[in-house]
Length: 209
Image (tube, rainbow, N blue to C red; front, side, top):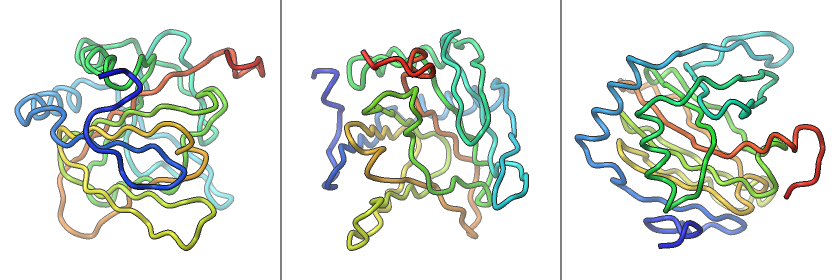
């Protein structure tokens, strides 16, 4: 399988390339990785500006990667922590199926109140057609996708469970937004790892190579 063809099935979405591979990590491996990362990660809860006021993001996060993989989103600049053996192992496993990544954002949803609002991973330093590979660990949560302009299209809901791999590429980040909504039902912690490639030269406005 070439690095341009992710595993699993391609979702039937216009203006997008989204692939879902259920059980990409087996149950035992996913459980071990979840416990190790929850306990050993340098978690932070960042303040962001929303509707003219400063609030804490409704989840914990961490940013790991190569030394030059600084990433700015939601007005916050993230300097990478060095790769850990566990994160490096997942990165290497992704290489033949989703490409080479130099960074990973970890989001920890502690319970159903933690969530991620509608957004796209379309910052300049991610390049013109970002490839985002998301590995889910812990409890199952809904992942939503909606088209930016075609309101006649339904919102797509995917139940992402421990060990699942979701790959978004092509025009997806420019045509669609995604979210992880909160839920009132009792639910345990969910962790997702979103691997990506930062292009430092693009922060200074240099052409993409």
